[in-house]
Length: 193
Length: 193
Image 1 (tube, helix red, strand yellow):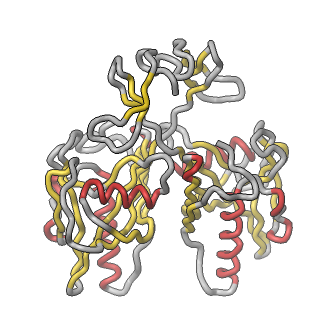
Image 2 (image 1 turned 60 degrees about the vertical axis):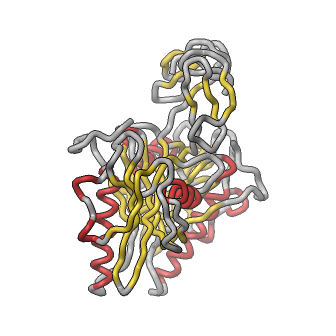
């Protein structure tokens, strides 16, 4: 940020009175330009048949991580709820209709100022189709997940949590639960800003 | 937003190619200025003695809703996690040290572009003190909660969920769980923007 979005005057990086952090402040009109983390919201679309669970993944058609597999997800928009965002992104990227279930993972990625959240979801039909941001969309059994070609660590963690909980469910030792995690800046692959 | 924060040129409200929503776009330097919801994060600091649970509330020293009672909470900052934010706001507003427990409520307030989240927490000592944004800070038993003087609907809902879950715990019928809710724009009191 270089200029005030209200009056076009250059901004200064200073700590306002009664604050503890540096902010971009306009010394002309007085506006303080706060910058806060963004939410990336997605779904985990599940299709169950004959007792076997499959999950819908999208292969990214856009950078960063073009060609890698992801759960449908994207930045939450103003005027929508977190579950609205999950359903919208699933429709846009995977052309898929889902029934949203509970919030399943909340993963902090503080070094890129993001919080990623994924909702468990039931895929309502098999008429899915790649949207403009996806090269292809398909269902995966656990044994078929392309672990080396997953787009981002938050997707890998969420899929691992999913299959751990599914195993607990199968063996009668537990149920789906909310998984929370804070990621640090030391991944095999950098997370884009 | 009136001017580009990168080049000071006036922005235009248009739908960019490959997008479905209007954005503030700079036709000079090409920057698209996305605007996304913000997270308000807080804690529910609990103090248990002789089997009785009390919760720490702060009376607001600042507008909006000056003089009304709230859980310690505020906007999440860049470079921190959601639980970091809950602990920081509790220290700043209530001068209190807590141990963060699980995420307890996630409430969407889409008409003001906010998501409010509250963590259950254990108050570690009784050396709390009002910070600059609080007039006073004190512990409340359930029977003492000033329901008519609570600052915002998300606080009221979170406190009601808390006492419902505490009653379930006492009667052996359940445990704390994550509560999610989407608020609409028809409250007794307006939510500030």
